[in-house]
Image 1 (cartoon, rainbow, N blue to C red):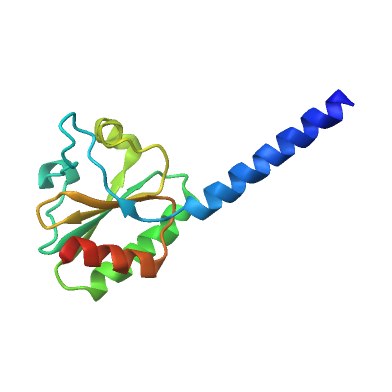
Image 2 (image 1 turned 45 degrees about the horizontal axis):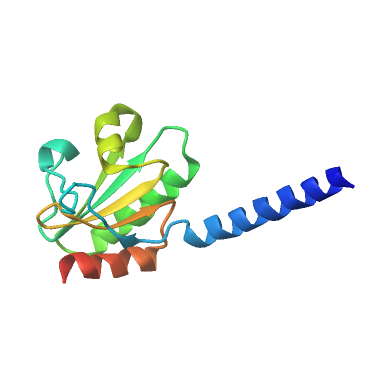
Length: 142
């Protein structure tokens, strides 16, 4: 009887975890600073390896083996092409481990929405939806 109870408990826990993760996956949330003074994370063109967009920048951290990264790349490139002054930068997470650690990135794809100054305004772990990316740009540009 104890074995059946443990198995049921493990299944219930795994189901709840899966439902919570699916609900949170790809949601663009407000970027929070990691500095001791509560300041926002800021990325420079040197750290990105590319120039910031005039109005905003969509930064994607990817890895070679990440299947959702391909979908995310297409979505972000399409949105950047639709909105004037928005750039899309893709960063190989494996090649930039210092930046990954500093920003607290734990999975790919991770998307950061930066304002014109390079401040992280929104971030998402997982593949975001096109409508969510467009709405997040409104927060970065507005």
